[in-house]
Image (cartoon, rainbow, N blue to C red; front, side, top):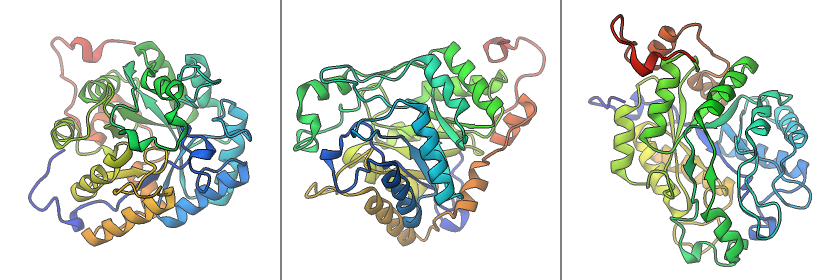
Length: 352
């Protein structure tokens, strides 16, 4: 991205899109009973509350009545339908893991099988986005957590903690290509989860090869543990590669969430918050609900002078429902340099 003179003036920035992640599949209801919804009606109401607070994107997972993260796509269909009816303007973004919560005590935290995750393209009603990870990676989500972050929660159990410490993201090249094709065919936007510059470069190659022909919507996921650490050097490195036409949301974990989001707000990027990412206020004197986290970002953004995106603006910025006909059109729309004409095309133009 280019940061020209005046790029930090809010009149030259897009309105802020806030993504809410309130369903928190890694936590159990007893970890934050005041804020973790369990019934479908409660989960729908949570979406409404987040929307009313200022979030226009809902990162969606589902719980069963026993409080565990649901792995049943029928439950996703039920919640998507309920949210669509209650807040039809909100962008629904389904988490591509479905649920990585351990099945039983002592079991591993792991993403569901390749074939199961492909079925996200068959959700009915269909979501606006599904998050797509690129490149198999370690996902040690607890690496940047402190002992006090898990005090009084289910994560104090060493078996649970270690399950998340040892988690990996399966995202092999063949799976990613097939997954994107299925989402494209269903008219669902791929929201790419980029853990570092390597995963971004792989996304760029998928675009240059014609696997993905749509708007480049990404999260920079800075949680350590196999992914970028949340610091200005890693963010700057990522931004130098990101084309001007991309829509980039910053994402982190625990008490890194707020400072990373403040950098994102100041720089004209977009933000994500919610108890999936963080349970605490900055002094860690109390837990902070998803709605409170959204309201905090709204206040901060307004202090900067930056407007909060309406649902209509968020859909327009993210180009929901837009796909392109050719590789060349996709590159141009997203702000990439065109593919090389003639000569050796190399790996960027390898047929798939």
